[in-house]
Length: 292
Image (cartoon, rainbow, N blue to C red; front, side, top):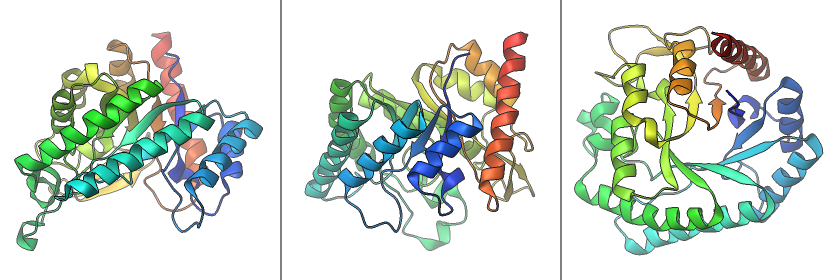
């Protein structure tokens, strides 16, 4: 498997500069970094941010830069606001692609939460599809048809992260959204580490096989269940939780997946140490799977 191994930026959001992040990622052995659309608490223009990432990539020798479109919200009832969100996403993609050879953008459609606080007990009815109506599906489809068409022109892939409290919460719902958008540039970012928080979650194998033709990116992280409530979980090291990432890698190899393998840091503490530990684990797994 020649999939690039990507470090999610959340391993290095503890005061490190962008250049430090890139140099550390290269030193540890990552192929790239997934950055956010902007840095929290930093007063800078979009252009300055992209320029800094481009410069840091060059001086560090980092091979890949991925970005998130986590700022996009097309769930607003106001058509003008949805159009502005589309314009903003397209502007970001164009400006990033002009300075950096981008491959994949992690996409979001905007948070959805149930207005009835009594229903906010679990993610199955708190948000995402638990709060969605037909109009939300229509808005996301219309907006990302346009965003996807622009991404296609730029040679960029867009991947909706499977994430609680969004229309694209479970892998099945995310796949359905991609089918509705029906654009080759728009697919799915499989974060099975989020899927395990839902009740009646399908197995890893069933999940991957059911969405395999739309997986454009992955997020890997792990946790263990602490009670019967699937939301009552504790984040762990990548190799220390209930998700079998050896099986995950075998299944990705089986379906011929060639996209990024992006690992995340869901735990507080010394995240730099976790980055080294998690990378060593997944590289060993990949090597052993390849040798079988």
